[in-house]
Amino acid sequence: MKKPIALFFVPMLILSACQKENKLNEAEFKALMNQVAIGWSTQNTTLALSSFDVDAIYMEPPNIQYYQGHDQLRPYFDELTEAYKMKFHRLWFDTQTQTGAGEYTFSYEKDSADTGTVVVELKNGKIIFWREYQRKGPADFKDYLRIDNKEWEWHIGNYPEPKDSLPSK
Image (cartoon, rainbow, N blue to C red; front, side, top):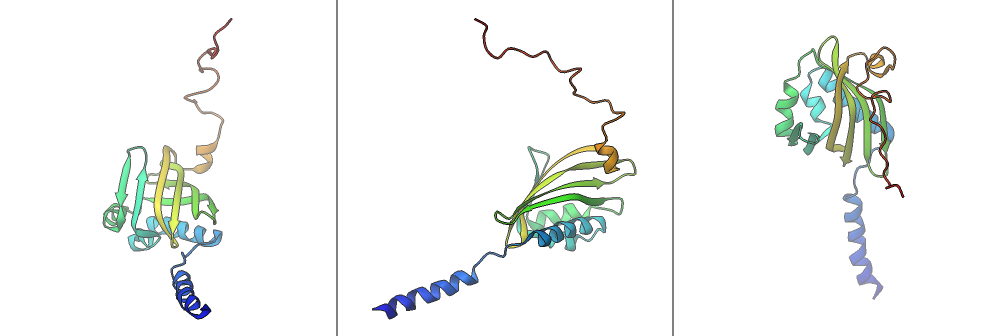
């Protein structure tokens, strides 16, 4: 009676091993993300696309940009000229969930750039979901982050008076 059970489970184990998801480690994730940056910075659409799953979703929420799959990403990436450069400053990766993030600058002029963060989800070693959040600012990352000699939109000097959240008795 043990033989029929073994004959059933052994093929299932082999099938399961063959379908095991390809998971990246931190170094491989960093290489994958830098491959996107190099592809965009050198106008190599094929290189950039090779980091994305063929059905990947690329978005800038809540409603700025949305592209799905290589068919929509290719013309988007193809529009980049040598004026466009991308650089990751920091990358973080959770190997367990295959989710990562990066802080980047995407420049396209001498003095202006989009600096932001991207959150990505991977499946089988490819980006399946890319969500970016960015702000326009100086192209130099150190200037973007500096705190002196700036006119801040919000600070304690222009913050509204606190309102009591509890009614007084």
